[in-house]
Structures are given as structure tokens and as C-alpha cells.
Image (cartoon, rainbow, N blue to C red; front, side, top):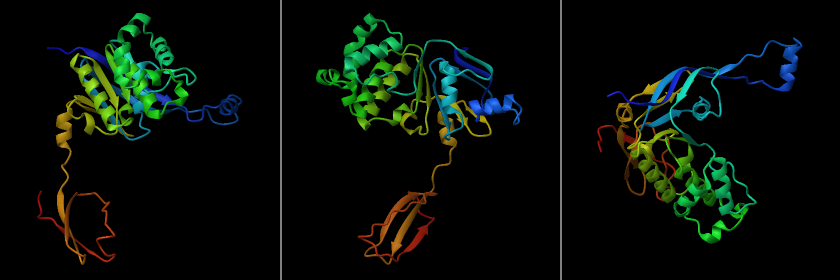
Length: 287
């Protein structure tokens, strides 16, 4: 059965000019320096995201992850190539974008709804669910946002953005905020959206929180974009850390701990161990 494409990238290139200032433009115009050359951030990228996928975008800082996400949402346009998006896109890039810090919580809910083109009746129908998700009290919502903690603002913004998702949800590192309980609630909500057929695209550095939900994705490096068809196969292909037994000798007592190979950070408790110690690694140890 042929799967329905939600997002399609075809030979997409996005370039930026690192020196696109007024002074540089004028100097180039009057031939006082060489013409300005653009530098490609993403070059000739082609892939499909299918309806219902939980698609991840991995890569180091500066390789174009957020740029790619903003092109999907329409905030940025590709320099060349084409992007096809089938469905309404809800993007969460900056959680608190659009807030007015002089207004109270209730008024900011109305403001965000207006920005997201949500009708008044739709907001009223979902208001109780939004407030319950945010875990903010009536007293909190009557206060100006300038008196909110960062956690309160995060919960309010996430509650609004996550409630009105229709077809496609774009997330840019937003699961890195909030306390553990709130992160868990967000993940559960995302899971519910996935079960209803919503296509989810997330930029992340850490797939551990979502490894049971992710389906496919791409890995962006400075040289290329690699398509990962199946996340579970990709995860299994990564070499499992080799475990060692480490024993500290010449201490008050011997201590055995288990660490992953390649971990070069070993914590020594100075209260239990003297400064001089011998580190022995037993490669025959298995967990």
C-alpha cells in the first residue's frame, strides 16, 4: 500500500550570505571589493516524510537543522529546489514567542490564539483542557506574565501550542525545557497525537526520550544529509558500549564500578580514596 506523503523535499538548497550588511553591499556595488558569495547551509537535499511519521532531525549545531524546520513551516524559502507540504503546519520553535508580558495569562491565551488563527469559539471549547495541561491556577492566570517564572511561561505556551495541532507538528528542541513531570506529560501528549495520525517532525540532540516513538529521520553533517529509514535499526546499528570492571588499589578499600568504554570522566571520591591510586582495567569483565 502506497503511503501518503506529508512533506517532500526535492533537491533543496538553502544558502546564506555571511556578510550581507549595508556596508558590504555598497562596497560590492561600487566595485570596491569582490562580489558577495553565498554559502550553502543545506545542499541538494531530497527526502520524504510520510503521514503519521515521527521524524527526527539529528546533527551538530550549525549544520542546518533549524533552517530545515523553518523551511517546512514556510518561515524561510529554499534558495533552489522545491518543498511540498500536505496539511496544516503547527510549529513550535520558540515557546514563548508572541507573549505580551504586560498582559495576564488569560489575555495572552487570547493573543496566542489570534496569532495562530484560532477562532474564539474553538478557544473557549478547549480552554479548560489548556488550563489543566498548563497546571496554572486561576490566580496565576490573572497575573501579568512579567511575574511568571520561566517554568510557568513554558507550561502556558506549550499548553496552547500543543492543543490545536491538526496535521503536522514541528518541534525544535522544545522537549529540553521544563521539569521531569512536565516533560513526561508533553511526551504523552505527543504520543496521543501520533496515534491519531499527526505527522511529527522534531529537531533534537537526544533521541533517548522518544526512542519508542520515532520512526525515521535524517542525520545532517557538514558534508551530507543521510536518510534513516527505520529508527530502531539505526539505533541497533550503533555499537553498544563495552563494559569494563575498574578497580582502585591502594585505597582504604577496593571499589569496583562499571563504566562505558570511551567515557573519560571518572569521579574519584576524595573522602574515601587517597591521592595516589592505581587504576586497573579488567577487559574480561562482562556485565
